Length: 91
Image (tube, rainbow, N blue to C red; front, side):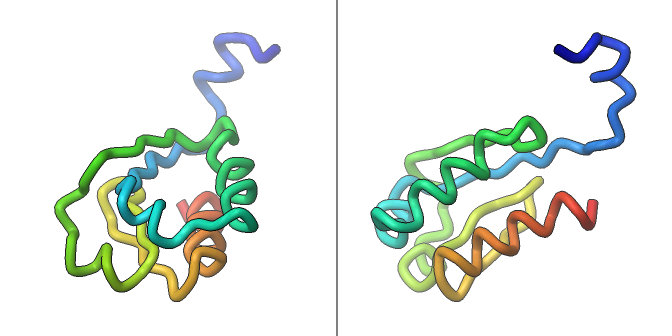
């Protein structure tokens, strides 16, 4: 277990990722769900799921998420996950 001081001065920045339930239901499947679940349980990820994020036109077209308030769009669920994973290395 990390000490309080170690956690406080950790260089790993946390990213807050928000999802729309409707979008997840529309684009995630049995293959991609476990991959998202594994990613979202990492200590550097704060995960929130909302009934709606008021991005209805986008929601119908593509898998997306909001990462620290910025909309991230994927061509597929796998593409979205790869983009979300790369956020940790660029922030």
